[in-house]
Each structure stands twice: as C-alpha cells, then as structure tokens.
Image 1: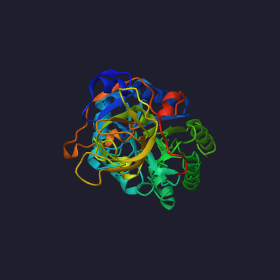
Image 2: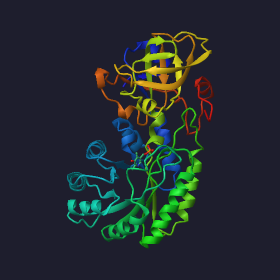
Image 3: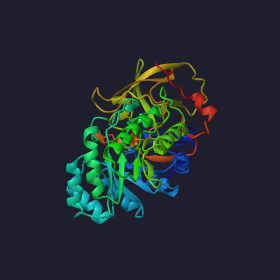
Amino acid sequence: MHNYNDAKALIKAIQPDESVTLVRPHAAKRAARYFVDNFPGKSLYAVKANPSPDLLQILWDEGIHHFDVASIGEVRLVKSLLPDAILCFMHPVKSERMIKEAYFEHGVRTFSLDTMEELEKIKRATDNADDLNLCVRIRVSSKYAEISLAAKFGAEADEVADILMAARQCSVQLGICFHVGSQAMTPAAFSDAMELVRAAIVEASVTVDIINVGGGFPSSYPGMEPPSLAHYFETIDRSFEDLPISYSAELWCEPGRALCAEYASLIVKVEKRRGDELYINDGAYGALFDATHIGWRFPVRYITPKPSDATDLKPYSFYGPTCDDMDHMAGPFHLPATIAAGDYIEIGLLGAYGCAMRSGFNGFEAGEIYIVHDEPMDTLYGHHNDVDRHNVVSIQQGQ
Ligand SMILES: *Cc1c(COP(=O)(O)O)cnc(C)c1O
C-alpha cells in the first residue's frame, strides 16, 4: 500500500478521480492497545464492523486474539488470516450447517443463542459436544444508543431462566451476553443492562462463568461526543463486581465501532455544485450508508493543495454518484462558501461500518486504499490534535 502523510499530500500527488480510502494503522493500534490495557476483562473484536484483513492483523498484533463472528463467511475469513484466533459465533440465529462447519472444521466452541430451539440446533449440529461454551443473549434496552439492536435478538425476561438452566447442562462455561445498541452515549446503558443480567442469574440460580457486555462503545462524531471510555469501563467493572457470580467468572466485551472508527476516512471529489448541494463521488451505496439512512453527520474538511483562507463556512448536503434520489446525505456538512466542482473533501471516522458496507452498485466500485500518518479527525484515545480539531466543523450539541 502506498503511503502519504495526509489527504492533502495525496491530492497534491494524484488528484484521484474515484473516492479514495485512507487508513491509519496507528489509530487502530492505539484503540486496540487501549482496550487490551484498560478494559477490565477480555476484549473480542466484532468483525462485522470492518473485516479488512490489514485491520484484523493490526488488532491481532496489538493483543486482540478473540473475535466475535456472526456468519460462516466471517468464520472462514478470520481463520484463514489468523489460524490461532479464538472465534466466538455470537449470532443467535444460525443455520445447522454453519454451526457444524464452525465446530468441526474451524474449532469454534463458543456460540450464542436466545431460544430453546437454537440450543437444540447447536446440540444436534455438534453431535452433543461436551466442550461448548454457550452464551445466552438477553434482550436489553437500546434507549441510550444511536442505533437500536433491541428488537431483533434476545430472550425475554420470562424465558431466560429456562434457557439458562437448559444451556447450563451442556456448557463447560455458561455465559450471558447482551448488546446495548451501537454508539451508546452513556455508561448507564451498561449498568442498566447488568441489572437485567442480575435478575436473570437470580431467577435461574445457575452458575454463570462469562458475562459478555457486547459492543456499543461509542466513537466521537459531530454532535455525538460521548463521555470517555474510562467511564464506561469503570461502570462495567463496578456492575460486574456486584453480580452474584463465581469468583472465577470472566468479563468479556465485543467492541466493533470503538476499535475501528478512527482507522479509515474517505477522500471524495465534488463533481458538481447546485446551490448548497454538493454532488460527490461516494454515497449511500459506498461508504456513507449511515449518513444516508440514519442521518449521521460525519466530520468533514475541505482539502486543497493551494494555500487557502476558506474560513467562511456554509452548511451543505451531499448527493452520491448513483442515479437515484435516495443516494442523498442530508448533513448538514459545513464547508467553505467557495467550494466548487473539482474540489476535494475528506470525510472522517468511516472505519467502522462505512467501509464495510460498500457495494459496487451502479458501477461505482471502491477506489484505492492508501496509508496516511496524520491524526484522525477526532479521537477517543487522547492525543487530540488541536490544529486538526480546529479544522473540523461540528454541529453544536443538541442541534
Ligand atoms: C454488531 C455487534 C457488536 C459490535 O457492536 P458495536 O456497536 O460496533 O461495538 C458486538 N456484538 C454483537 C453481537 C454485534 O452484533
């Protein structure tokens, strides 16, 4: 992969016609190191957030050795790249054939489930294996999260005890897991969920060996600046210590977003300007799904190879490159009043989900990937770069 110091140097050198992904290995390393050193338990990486092989290798090298996988495709991918990785199949609804392949061909021993039916499926598919670690997914609220994960999965309070008791019979380690929703904006999301874990343990009166608090750890986007991760870790640690579990019980988490959001950004070119609408060469079917479908406002900055005094900023919306009206990102994204066709914009913090959800719809394929060495537009991991931050225009809180 080619290296540049930053987006500006890249544009000066190559004036890309297609959108370009910039990756920052140092940012992913820093995030992984932070979780490895500070989370009061074991950190699994949720592969769906960004399955890029380079990123998986970086996380592995920094000490993340457990991976939360949700499909047989992710199982195969991680095993092929990192043969010694420990995979946990945490999708609560799997096909029997996938369970079989994961167990017999890839050595997967940890599975999640949220129904008796799934438990029976796992037992059948593994020929009643006696070395399983089963995690029962309970339903918790997503009320503090920007993206809900509350409706689809999770056993209800009145079913949990039966499932836990049945799963206990065929588990070496029995776990309880949950997901508070993605981009959870307060640590209370986790302490509230831990109260439901407590109730489940008390009601089932089983020995629980693993508490898996899932993902949901936030990143810092314009208008969504969360408290520090240290607060989340303290809250989780305190709630965990209070649970009626054995002295040797393990605490796990499965961050996706927090480990990779800062890893990648995107350079896009303005193809056309129509008033306050900018037609750019990436969009809803590219790396900007969340900007379109949940109105997420990613940080943006104007990149110009020339000296610029473009400080008079205006709000813009974006149109992506495909031919339909849905390829639209409302923003607002604040950029110079003088911006025009041919100019470039860097869109930050797209390492989580954005890059992973790209499609080649309408012939707009992913462009080249380059390594850059500058700081991401924002970071949760200290080292705020004041000069950079000054350039990042964010929406006032509450707007
Ligand atoms: C998506 C997902 C994660 C990661 O969630 P983030 O909000 O990106 O941290 C973790 N665990 C499970 C089961 C998931 O489905």
